[in-house]
Length: 598
Image (cartoon, rainbow, N blue to C red; front, side, top):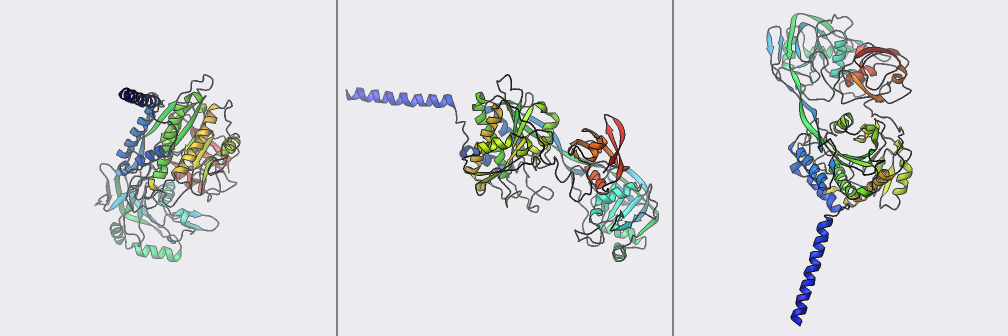
């Protein structure tokens, strides 16, 4: 009898264990947002093997595979036609390509040793006579008059100019805004020069590095920096020296310009940008609600970071070429994205609207991933009702987080006020829609946005931004709130109304030092020569009043050519309020000229 009872107990025990195993297998892993899962994602993304997730790197490709794998496991569908991946090329550098030659009369110079083309230089063959134009200034304003070109015939000739200014170490000098190499090139080009050669002041030792700058493209004339030894040889043959020239100009604060007889410069420049393959990862939950399923909420976060840092990378420790883990920036946001995707997929029956989950690449390169999505989205942008962005959500301090973009829809303030009650943290609400992350591109296209952020910290953009510093409870609490907000937006019978809240561009479009602004949003990722208008930021501004439209490409202003965004900014800085100037632009393949009153 005891043996029979023992057998029954064993049978019941095994039955109960088997029953729970079946239940667990049928339900699968928990779909709830957990601190453990958030940390697993953050540790994977910020691991040294990911190499700082710079676009195109092996580590970045690992992340793309990781994202696709997780989205599939949650039951999400591809968001870029039949693929989860939206690839795109980005310019990441610049290099000498093929034959590069510079000759001064019969003296051959070697690229990288005797001279270096600058990143904005034109390629091709150019030959001509030479003039020297001092500091290369053409300044005429209330506080300063200096024109190095007034007594020179520059048309069809090379211009040699000195770098910097008489006050090279004074950031507040009146010369500062006129001293950049690009600005001096523009002045030479406007005077009719076919090329410009820069020489260094006596304090400078090295050749100016050939480094890539986004939007600095071919400016139409060659631009070259001559090594000190070659510059010294050049002026010695003319009876001058760099030291003598610099001391004279700095002492007199007057132009020093002269013709250079019997000298011809010939150059053949061949520089090209290098590109790499980046990729957004896009997944979707398609709602079954017939009335609302064609409307979408976008949830986004960027996964790229700074790689191993270095000069020009954006690192705050540019001399330390170590892996930048980017645990908070922005492994934390991607962890939140994945956890939201898993939970929302499990609660799909609650959703009336569909949802797009986008892991953006190349955010650190200038929001290139979000711009790519906007340019070639498979979803009609008019069907996107809102965009929720998470960037650096892992370092909540003093139990406080921030949400921006609250003013981009009249409904946001009331909704967030109701949902933030009884949370274990304080949420600060800011109205402006623009901000330094991917949501800015959606706001510029009249889509309501919310931007969640826990603040900057000392480890930002350094090798010290590691998973060990993540505030896990704070991250989970914030992601829980975002989930509740998204569910409400997805279930509401009323579509959000867009409301403009603050400028649609940052300082790059209209720096405070500018006396005027056109009131446009430049398309920073455009490949077109000139400045493509991404939108009108001020409906009562000069551009709108003159009839400028989205999609126009500005070719010149005040009869001065514009080839890229930097030239546009330089031209704008020369203008004053009250001026009426011609604005030439290309619209639908036709050239038109409008009169703009500033």
